[in-house]
Structures are given as structure tokens and as C-alpha cells.
Figure (cartoon, rainbow, N blue to C red):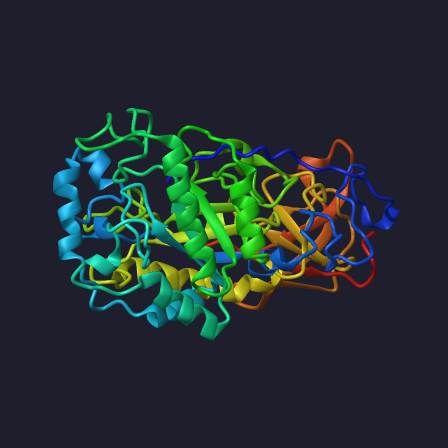
Length: 453
């Protein structure tokens, strides 16, 4: 994995508003039907790829023979392991506890709707029955087609399957390792670096993946170190798999951007996005693959990240690294289950909604709206106290609900001392359980008796 900078320019428009609502002049434009593909926010594709905007939250899985030493998915490169030694790990590959349905059970319990899995990481080891290299799961003690098993399970349960593929390859003799980032220092004995030859190999592998496993819903490129451009590769994928969304780390700009972890400050700060976005993060702080001595992010850190992207009409991939036996580690599993409990309680605030980044003066509160009378307040940046002013709103909702636990929330429209200069009376939420819920992200639903705009 690596960071891919995303151009995330805020989209601002204006709309006519009622004086009683007290809405700002430079607010995000809302159409009559927020649930349509033409609603504000990211423009939809208008074809089979639109499943991407319905599912929103997915599971990322990094898995391969690097789970045997259990240190990092880039073990060969980061630990400076000679290729001749690293490839011997294939002789130990026997994940006898791997059960794709158990992975999918966890996915669903976490509120996730689709799966993205590594087919080949930078080490070149392939998790499917490929004819292009012997360095694959079929030539191991396990001897089973893992991608085939996952595809069958996903199809039975109608769960979209997306395939990760690394362009960099530390095993293939034709890949031109030159000591650039995420490359070996140079060719290994017996290598014959030839980019054109490697691209033929790559295209044959991509064709296998897009031909042999039924419907594929996404292709997730990574590590185009030479920054080579070749739109024909994605064109082939689209021809073979019309429902597949393609990310921006391949041979052209693809369909969506991929801000990674917390590396992309522009994406993190944007009020909204011009094109589809899928942020990605791992539960582990050091590795995307299984690391036996891993440090883990707190639930709060992950929840804040997830909420901040989902509430801005973006997708989110949260990663786990299964063990060499094929099971999701207990710590990772428990994190996903806790996130799933939170997600279930607030899911309506991400469903059939549009972002409303200009509704409030404060940029610390993210807002989504379902219609002209229903808005959701996302406190993913936390709150300094138990109350919050929603300036410039000046109309009382008929109902306010804390989605996390279903409790009613107190609201008033009044003048507070800090607004003495303009004597402004604004909607204020009172007595939120901020201390009791400081380990989670609160989401408040406001329902109004008349149209806000």
C-alpha cells in the first residue's frame, strides 16, 4: 500500500432559502429529490458500476505468504530478505482454517457491503490458479484457488467482490526492479528486465481474473512505480466486467480516488468531492497484512475516519490481515464487531442522503440530508462540551434524536452570551452525553415540521 494524493476540491453552490430557516447564502444546493443520482454530491456513473454508491462501506483484506513470518505485507522488501529465501515461504502455505463464509459473516456483522482482496501483492505471489507463473497458491501444500473460493462465496451471498493487483512485482524476472520506491535494489540473478514483456504478463493475468471467476465488481490497482500510462488495460477490464469500478492507481485515472490512512490532508479537509472517492485504512497501525505483534488504532480513531468520509458521500475500505491459517485475528475481529454495532445504529445517516457542507458556520460538524426536512449532524471531530450551537439555523425541529442510542435530544432557539454583539438567536442542542460517549462518534437526527429550503 501507499498514499495516492487525491484532488478533492470543495463543490459549492447556492440556493434560495426561507428567512425563517436562517440558512447561509452560500449553502450547498439541494435538488427536489435528494435520493436521485443527480443529487448534490458525487456524480453517479449511470451504469452497472453504480452499485458502488449503494454499498459504501467495504472490507479490505491483505493476505498472502507474508502472513507466515507475520511482520508486514512488504516483508521481503522491508526486511531485506533475498528472493531465493523469501519464495521458500510458498512451501509453508497451508491455510487449513480458511473459510470464505466466515470472512463474509464478519464483513456483514461489521456493516460492510463488499469485499476487496489482494490477488497479488508486491511479492508476486498469486492467490489464484494462474497459468502465467508457478508462484501461486496451486503450487503449495494448500493447492487451492483462494480467489475462486471467495468468488463462489460472494456470488452465493450477492456480495460484490473487488480484486487488488500490484503492478510492482519482486518475483517476476521481466519486472524492471531499479531500486525505486517499493522495488528491489536491482535485477536478481536470472532476471531479464523487459517492461513490454512484463506488461504482456500483467494483461494475461488481468484477463484471467476478469474471465474465470464470474462477475467481478471492482479492480484495485496499486504501485504503478514507473507511472506508465496505458488506457487499454482498463478498457479491457470494462469490456469483460461492466460492473467493475476501477481505482486511480493503475494506468489511467480510473473511476475513483484512493486517499490512504491519514496521509492525504487535502482529502481529509475537503467539504465535498468532485469525483468518486474510496478512502482506505487498516485496523493495524504498522501493517496491512497480519502482524503478530501489531499495534492497533483505537475504535474512536477509526470511527472518526469512517464517519468523516461516509458523511461526505465517499466510500470507505477498512482492512484486516488474516493469519497464515486463514482466520481474522481476534483483536481485528473484535474491532470490526464494535464498529459494526456503531454503524448499525447510525446507518440511516449515510443512506440515501446528500452532504450539506455549507449548512452550518462550523466546519467541525459534518451534515447530511435526506430531504428538505431531515438532516443529520455528524460529530466526527468530537465536541468540547455537552452543547452545540447550530448557527445560523434558527428554527426548532419537531424531533431531535441521538441515533447512537435512540434517545431524545433537547433543543432550544435562544440567545447565548457569546452572541451578544449581533443579538442572534440560534438553534442550540443541549445536554448531549459527551462524556459518556467520548469513545464514539455521535450522530444526531433533526426532523423539521416544514421545508428548510
